[in-house]
Image (cartoon, rainbow, N blue to C red; front, side):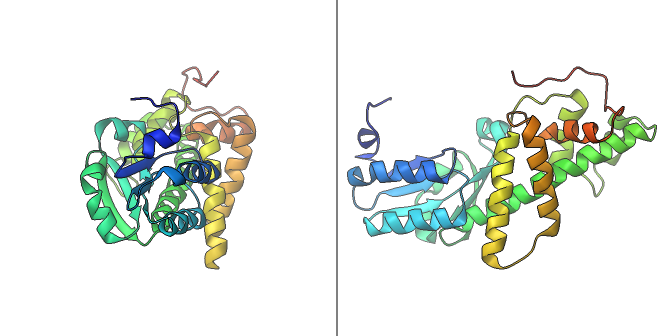
Length: 253
């Protein structure tokens, strides 16, 4: 049921769930809602934010007598519709157990550490996603350029050590040239920057991820609203005359 004011939505809630565009937006919503929350309310943020932002949200809510869990997800629209999302939860074990029936309605929840750890887990997920999408694009273009059938190559290597959800889902998107957004390039680029920020805060270097981020910055210049499978389009521009498949490009308007 829609309500006219945010305070009306959270005032009597035992659990509040937010899933918003970015950390600053989450922070604004928490600030606006804070005065209306009752003591002990559990706020679950399922957005993808920086670890430091999640830790700040936790501190802010605990200081107000509330509880907080950061629980970003992976699985896309299909996983949300099917209730099979992978949920990465950071926070007190008791709070995650309290919310388990809510989580299980959406998918599979795993506690990965204290507040902020959920966001670290999501960044690890996105690190793998971002890199693998680019590698799948390169593999399909190599197959095409070297005279093999890229669709047949994809079918041949599935089930072997190169099998992945990215090869399954985004590989098919590339073959179909379907770049209508599931996960947008702009969102992946935000995640890439958050990954590098987390690495800097942890005092480690991620050289491959740095290169992948540069690729997404280039992809984002041309296709910010397209699906992140548009890595293939940017790769084809680097290789004039090469194109995977004959289907027309499907791109957002």
